[in-house]
Length: 255
Image (cartoon, rainbow, N blue to C red; front, side):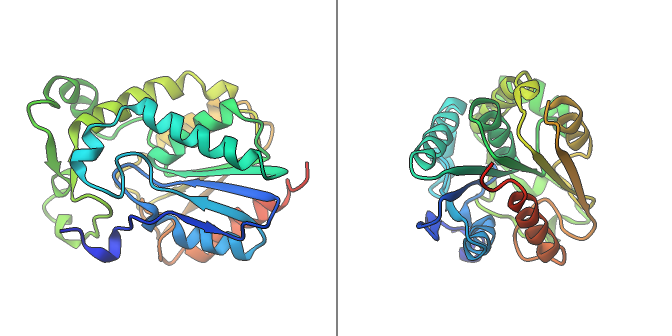
């Protein structure tokens, strides 16, 4: 069973009358649960916000294992294209793998601005992800998420979305990062990068990699001290993060 308070199969839209559209992408194995508060907040700030569950997400881990990384790309491209047909200004926000997809979108669409949060392009456990997963993902289809953390802390965490890593899907995420790394120089829109010092899934070098590789003339970093990987859920830094995202986007309305 999913812990109902950390799992959400619903899609969200707020303030659909606005001409300023924000497309928000959740993280790998997660759901709209982790971004709906941000979507609601930005809706209240005058933006039309959309937060949908990616293919294979918000359903079952088995579903996730059946997805290809191209399914995620096509889904978010369609989402932004649809938003572009009804809005004058387009912004994208992504977190974790959602940030990788947001980077791809930023290399393809003329966005007003984008937020890349807790990006995972480089993996903490390189050998496991880059070497072992491609070999063993069909033999060992799932891995308990708790095993990604040391025994001293693994029982103190909230595990969002699925309680396991769907390993074929992890392999697809690996392929996605390979593709998007090559596209970073094609990102030109104003960019806000957010990273948490307490993040145990996204290593800090991801922020430097993105910051140094994108071609955006306007780029900023926000490093927060108390949040963890799930930057947009309720945490001591949430107000700071939400206000910073809003003020950053407000600069580029109508450009």
